[in-house]
Image (cartoon, helix red, strand yellow):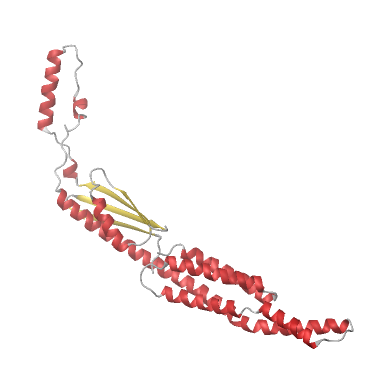
Length: 286
């Protein structure tokens, strides 16, 4: 079980310099990947997308790469071919247009291609950057698993609390029906009227039917069991848990609507609070 919220940062040192990968992940309905790569290294994206899809199922994930080349590769050098060609063009222009202004050295250096690109072994660098990104992905997955374990513990605490609330409710309905029958008899006695036992039995039976929440309690227990089973499964379970939270909430609402005993009403409110707390946590589960 994994959370969708995590962050990973990995630095890798090579002969050519330093690579820093940062990956951050937040909750999302689907897997959405974004990349912030230095100019000239966009070709990394396709390979990283495939690797991410094999390791991540859901979440909005952003990869960011920072490159710091070694000092000897950052030392500028002239591209003799481009510079010589530019000098020839400048000379030709001055012959044709003697009044043309002269270019200073700084302006010449700004010309595209005059400063030679550092000689990089791109194939080796691509392999190094991909391997470093793989380390960052593993670190991200480990963080998601740790967060997932924490969420699992929180949800199990709420499930235990729900079971403690539900357990005594089975005895509430018979007690409430008995109390209702007693109140009816006392009221009839106050009115000094004859008791129609058949009619009284019908009224008590109707109230018992109205108060009967055995089905709702059974469904709550069943859904709690299904949540526990889902928590033990491997792979993405977030969508299933979200559905089960909806089912639990529906049964708690039904329980509250049928409650005419204060104990049932209070239990329904407490159940809804616990379910809402779980639902908020479930939104972060992959």
